[in-house]
Image (tube, rainbow, N blue to C red; front, side, top):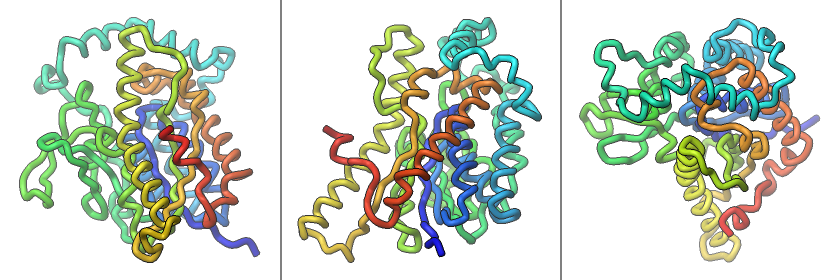
Length: 344
């Protein structure tokens, strides 16, 4: 009998690129001997986590897969991704360039340079509002596993705020995905500060936050589904590419800080400077496709094109399969990634 492998998932944000995470989750949920015990999500990662948990509680693994399918059909604005098959001959980079050169995106991008989300007055509406309103929050906040955490950034003091349990509602999910250049800050009464607080995207302070997963009730293996390239060989030269790389670096910096701290603690444990029963021996694994993500840009994050979403799901499933064919054997034994090499 195969022993069940228990993991936590760390789900990054990255706009429509979160469809890659959808594909990874779709593949992992097919494995009966792989148990998802906890999840920490930011932005698109929070949406993926919410869909997975509510679907899992009501319909098991297939319910989670169906709910993720529903979420991304909502994001793409279609009922069937096969409707985009006619664009199959085009590569992702070409599709991204077509979107960047399209008149609607050009106008929208120009307006963002001179107008804030507050300029629209009573005509403003968060585009995620109608989607998150349809989530099943009774089950998202359920105490049953997988335990679920959502990260957002408190605007007033720049600190991370982790929402969990019945704190997770439509506003918490919108706050986690609130890019300040695109959306108005989401205001929520914060019981930890006893006042109304404004929140922005959680990626600025944790993309995603790993520390909530250091819960004694959760396993020591964290699988990060990474959708923001850690490296890009080409130097960005256009204003759009420069801003995109700045955002990627900013959104990866919080994750890298946490990984550095984890690596430091592991070294202390290995040297005997800290007893292993006093600190958690966290094992880190990562599922990513930096080569694919390097072909994409801020445009494909911001514009939920059905063809690109479909391709990203397929790429995510392939990356999940690669993990299951190799690194999954390290769960419960050792980290799959070389943490010191990430900082050298």
